View 1 (cartoon, rainbow, N blue to C red):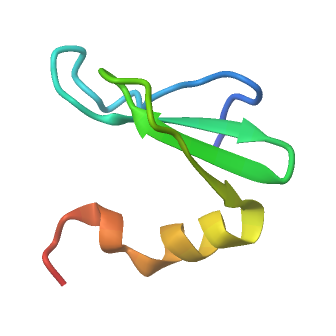
View 2: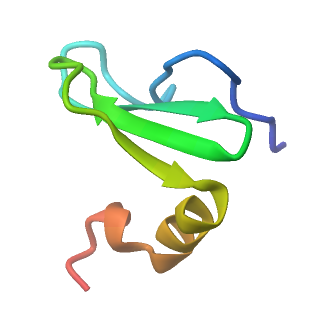
Length: 65
C-alpha cells in the first residue's frame, strides 16, 4: 500500500532507527527539502520535478552503482 508523505512538516522514514543518522524530508507544494536528522542545517531544496529525477536515479539506495 502506498501512502502520501506528510506535507508541511519534516519527517524521516519509518524504516530509520531512532539512534541512526538519516535525512529528513519536507514536502511543501512544488518543492521538497532535505536535511540531516541530527544537524538540521544546512537544508537542500529541490523543485518537485528535480526530486522526481533524484528518486528515479536510484543513487540514494546505496548499491554502489
